[in-house]
Length: 453
Image 1 (cartoon, rainbow, N blue to C red):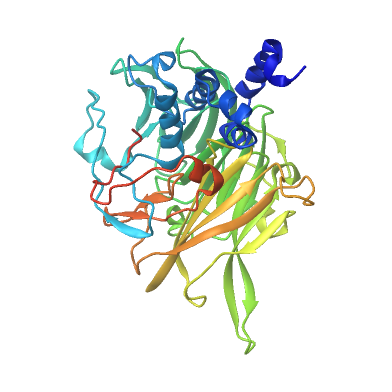
Image 2 (image 1 turned 30 degrees about the vertical axis):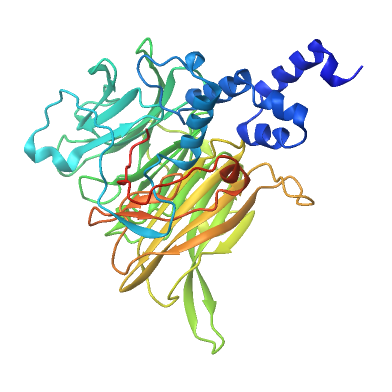
């Protein structure tokens, strides 16, 4: 009996395809006419796009039911997750000032003197927004109202920084709050709490409260808070605090940084199971002259010196980032190796079409010379032939940025970012096989947009 003559086998194949990521679906569709027909069915793409919606890669518009869309409309949504809105350019260029394509207006009042302590974060999927202004609120975008307000874990404290991310559990987010007490100007203390928030019932559950180092004497000791699965991290001056919030453990890592401008230097990021570090290592040229090299390092999180979290006392021991085990080390591309960096930012994005694959964008700005925006691909499956089971991290592209134009936002998945002067910059990226399969036509005269459609 052939595969094409058995409805039972075909039903099983449809079920298997419903569990595949989009990259696998595209690969299967090119194997034969029969599998092209199966993989082109609406049911397969409905399952694939539904998974993109669950992960937050696709915004779910009000009143739109995915099941009512055609197969072509579902494929178009997958294209936008991969390539961004149609108005985004893909070349290496200055794209001019951004034009807002979608505006969300919420009835919130902020004092004029609080703008430095104002921060918002729209969760992937676009249904909920977190707003920090000394306290932390969660807004429902559809309902246009606050649905949850965070209460600090200690008295007389304010939320100075935070991170929030959707989890694999439906309608659940994990939130890390970074707090500072205000009892007096001498004995201010810092605390970090990690909790989960049910976005439907609006109930929260605390998993961890940690007393972290006091940092410097300023009012804003935290920088670059981030969450990746069961792990969270935040910089406190020149040290990085890492947490396994489910297990209630922490680790403190010392990393090179400018103690006066640490907010401009993000030398760490998280990927599932790994810490991504930017270290300054020494090298020498043909004449024997030494110079510093900014180097990307991949270090297993399991190798860190984890200890139980203490809610009362800050951690005592500290590990030097240079001494951590490494599974990958690679020098970053540079225009002028003798110029010192003025700012460093790392962005890590899960690939919407390939499970276990991540895009890493690193922007290194340098004093008085052009900087570099580089794109690295991290494959945690170690899928390359004869490579073993370890992760693969490889440089895919590098784009020169304008001199003295410091990038102030992390690059998006497609490599777009915003500079200090408010103009946008397109880093450009080779989308590979899935990019060719989901190829789109662009109108160069279209305005640039910076919010997902």
